Length: 182
Image (cartoon, rainbow, N blue to C red):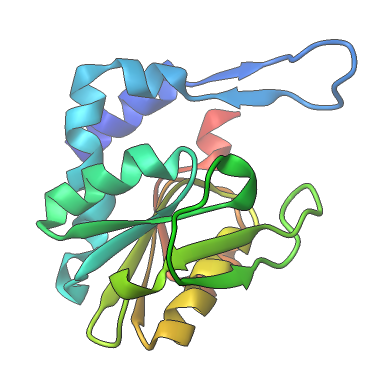
């Protein structure tokens, strides 16, 4: 199914012009979420390269990661932990472990937090995200894992758009290379 899934992902993807004030096109992945066969295949396809590493938990940053993370966790038969951002609404209560990302593709530093009691030294963490352009959020999640004593397994991404050295450093594996969507 991976080749068939890649073809379907490419077919359902669109670049959208947001209008006169924009300097670039914006990715539209909404077709991926609308297609039931794609949804059924995403979790198993994302985690396939990491099965030998035996992850014990999947972490994904808000917003799209909150859809992908549970699909990947279910495919692995493990739990899911969201990585929260301050601007995404109400933060969870209780102690949080925070990290700040290096600059992302827009030059922003993203603050991420995970509930402390959900991540510990016995965990092997697989991060899941839709698009990895700079690895900024992955760096922050890996820092949170280190602070909690958890082991970093890598990043399962829908689209890999980061430099090869970043992908290697963070263990990024993807279903599509961004060049396939241009």
